[in-house]
Length: 154
Image 1 (tube, helix red, strand yellow):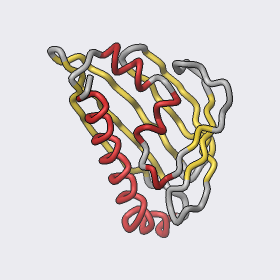
Image 2 (cartoon, helix red, strand yellow):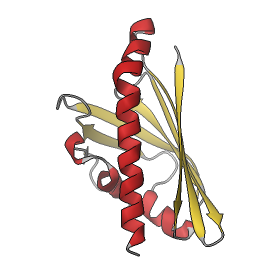
Image 3 (spheres, rainbow, N blue to C red):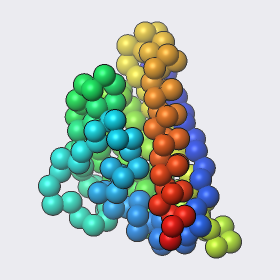
């Protein structure tokens, strides 16, 4: 199984505590996900902030409006500096997303490190090259625009 990496850095004019407060709230993920993906958190009674072991179920429509169930688990929480979400069930053969927040002179450097894999061997590699990687780049570009807009007004 071939693994791929996606890495992004975004500087936000906020403190690490403000970044943590926003990104550790599972309900905020919908605010930074492209509208056309029709992202919905299905888990009821979510806590205001994540914790180790928290399992969250989502419904998302990433391609051709086909609904996909995505279940993730939160791991390696080190508030207010980092956490990991890993897919337990969903469209990927493997998904590991590390969120890192570093104070940088009155701002926060937010890092996203995603390692993912697609099943289907060489066909999965082709699907990644033609569709998946482009879609992930679009999603993370949108996310960057949204968080910059949200925190610009603060």
